[in-house]
Amino acid sequence: MFFIAIAPFFFWLIIRELRSPRPKNNVSLGYMGVCLLIGMFLLWQPFKYWLLEQKMTAAVHELAEFKPTDVQCQTMGESLFDRTRMQWAGYTFIDTGDVVFKAGWCKNFKNYLSDPADANSRERYSLMLLVHEAMHVRGERNERKTECQAIQRYYRTALLLGIPEPLAREHGLKYFIEEFPKHPYYSEECSPGGKFDENISDSIWQFL
Ligand SMILES: [Zn+2]
Image (cartoon, rainbow, N blue to C red):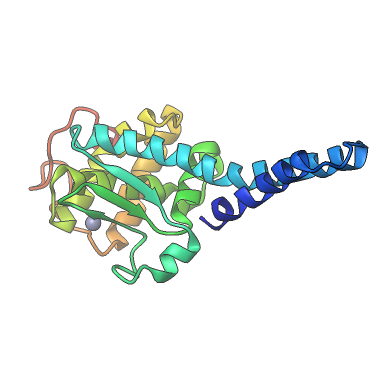
């Protein structure tokens, strides 16, 4: 947001130079070129995140059975002043379908998509977070059921977002077997044949 706010200043400097009665020489052309580059640079980062938000929104929309949704990536400043759910990586307003990813988590997600083979556990979990929030958008409020629904859709979502199939399988299984039992939303009912099993044909459990 800060970058977007100060970018117009550099474009204004260019307009001011163009309107100036001074003759345009190499110095003024160079000055305008530098201002243009700075302005474009300042807008590039927010634009990249806007594109990412559109991609995340489209994925959540599909996973949530096409319910209305909007995914927002918070900046560091926004997360610092967001006193609603401080301790969480992300959250959803179930009534409106609005999803919030706290500062850093969209970057984790972006890193995972760009280099899934070398992703660390937080980067891998960012995809689980997206599916988890999509299940809230879909209407689920019980956190244990939500996490279990997300686990069963991890593989599908990873493929949807372009993760290579062997990695989608490996990361989904790794989360379910190694990381989920330590998660606060762990439930014994979340297993093949368990109470939370939705019998989804492309569930990660088909590879157990
Ligand atoms: Zn939740």
